[in-house]
Each structure stands twice: as C-alpha cells, then as structure tokens.
Image (cartoon, rainbow, N blue to C red; front, side, top):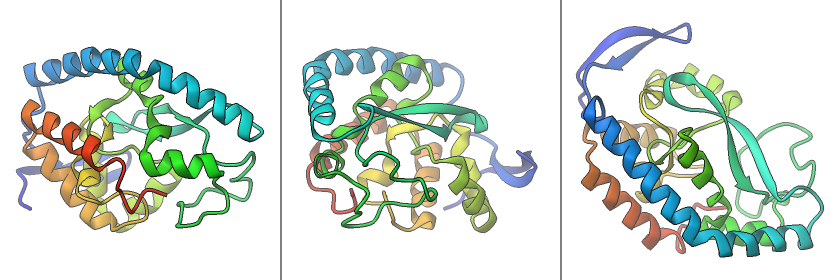
Length: 217
C-alpha cells in the first residue's frame, strides 16, 4: 500500500512515518468518546459473565485470576494489559514465546477462552482507562517488538495510533502465529482509512468471527 510519509526517528530507529491520517484532531476525540462510552456499556453488560469466568479460573487451576503483562501502545508508551489467566502458573518461566496449536502451557479452560476471545474481556478496563481503544493494532510485548523492528521497519508505524482490543488485521484472519508482514499491511490500511464507520464494521465482524477463528490458540 502507498502511504504519505516522512522520515523520523522512533526510539532510536529511523522509520517512515505517516504524514497524515484521518485519526487526528477532532476525530481522535470522537474515537476516544466512543471508546469510553461503548467500553463502559460493554463492561457493565459483560460483568456477570466476567464474574463467572473469574470463578471458573480460580476453581480450575492454581494462580491469579487475572494475568497482566507489559505491552507497547501509542507512541511507544508501555502499559499493563489485563487478561483472564489462560496458562498454568509459571508457564513462561523459560522465556516468552508465541502460542502454538495444542500449546501445553494453556489450561483446558484457557483454551476455550482463547478460542472464543473471552480471555480478553478484562481489556475493557484498559479501554476505559485510556490505555487502549476498542479498535486498533493489537499491542505486542517489548521482547517481540525488538525482533520485529529488525526485520520489519514499518512495524513501528503501528504505534502511531492507540492499540486496540481488535483490529482490521484480526478480523481478516491475521492474528496469533501468522504473517507479520500481512498484519502490518492491514494495520497500516486501517490507520490510513480510519473512520467511525470502519471501527463499527470491525467491531461487528469481531462478534461474528469470535467463535470461529482458526488462529486463536
């Protein structure tokens, strides 16, 4: 895809930066307003389900109910993301790595929650707090970003907008252990073509696809 661009320094790395995007000024305020309003409504509506899931996590495996992890968001700022714990305690004691199909680190309940994306419901708190948006490029862990930036310089452009619970890449099947290049292409398309209508379309597709995503494990 073609993007209007300029060269700038991002965290010590020269990258091509978007010169313009619809997601600025009043549009950014509108998007934040939608996030806060819809995020609050969804959080309250999903609260009974989240309480049930919290109880099930507690009863089926040792460890905390919520799993928090450092992620990178807008302009490279780091924040703590919230999820229901889906792995056994100390599952990553040997280091971080991507989940794979049949991952032995994942609990039976965790596998079901990942398949349906229910483990990500606590991220509605991140949205309400302003760390994330309902829609945007998925935030990644710093340890993986250090590798991605070496091989995919355009990857850092994803941090020019708020990270999201779901995104254009995800609803098109590019989530989990899939092509990073294709994910970048879809994320940059979203940034260049953003609109509230596109956000609502992505949210609708997320609801439709959440129970049939083959790459969610």
